[in-house]
Length: 237
View 1: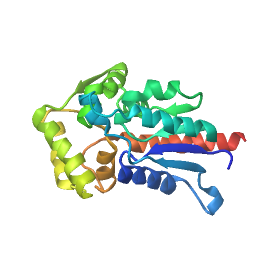
View 2: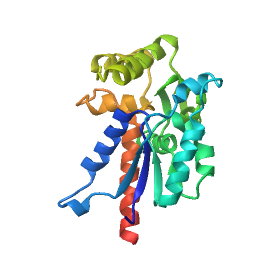
View 3: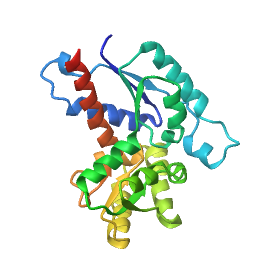
View 4: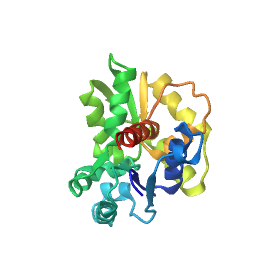
């Protein structure tokens, strides 16, 4: 297969399935050959990213991710898509292990945020505790001129429950809790926007229907950027 990209996913698997579904549904296709060429690495057994970020005595995901990159180097895709937000904690090491461009989801999301909110403002970041501690999204958002709100313990507990208890453990799309979290952020804390920086949150957002609140879904942004770059590569061949 030529002219393809690779997806480094499986963290988690249902969220990766959501990403693949997005790119398949958003491409304009009238026949099989109109869809995109890609290879999916659904590496479900990568150790938990947040667990390592919070406690470096547990197994590190990095050797597993670097092994995946080594295998993708052999395949020589046009670019690599890393679908796990928290795994971007290791982004520099991952990109350093390959000459192939790895898309940076937090950076793409922050750029989109700036496009839709050119005057800046107060924006909340919702993600895993690992992503919060890593500070990757905060840095990208602040570089774009935004005031970043990080959830307090009570709000982060709600986010954790939605990600881990509901989606990861029970495959339950808890839209009521999701909307409660957004109400806390917008109505209670006065934010103008929010970035969803966890693919489990993106999965809930995908199933919400019409959302009464403006959100920047990082996975959705990444899907659009993936399609854009894949089509550019296709047309240049």
